Image (tube, rainbow, N blue to C red; front, side, top):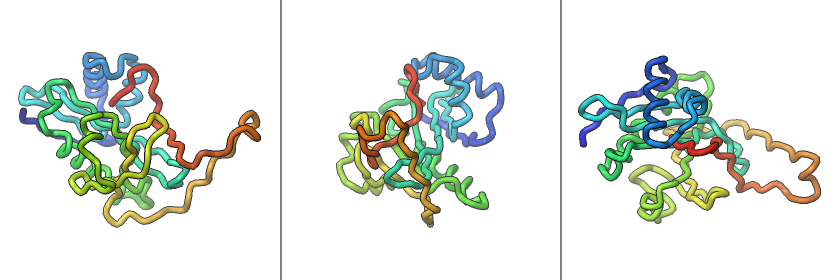
Length: 195
């Protein structure tokens, strides 16, 4: 299947928001329209098939892992069933990364050092066994609380920023549990909330 990839980062239109809401609902990815509308603001690139139908979406949201203490784009990618298995995921991911890197290069101060990926697809996770995967320029950094691979892919020439302060525990948690530096705060997953 041939696809065209279009960057839409920070260029969302009302028509595209509605198209994304319908796409996610029809593909049973995000069924709540309010959540889908909020997620639309995070879209980096979209993919369209030969007929112009939306068939893929990549989203990004700033997250800070306590262990890294650096801002990263928590990146998600969702393809319609017709696009899955068509070997388009890597090219799409790379295009999204380029868009985000270009955006950050244009800022006075970068808002992210790169991408943070929680590998949800078991086939993709099984294919990536090396600590560093050159094909998608991603380094294994551990497992998420959900037991999924966490990988980071830094932008070219990314430089460390001032470490983000760790959040203090609330009074109820004090004395019972220590801060877990490996804990990731993934994007909210209310219901079926995939990209």
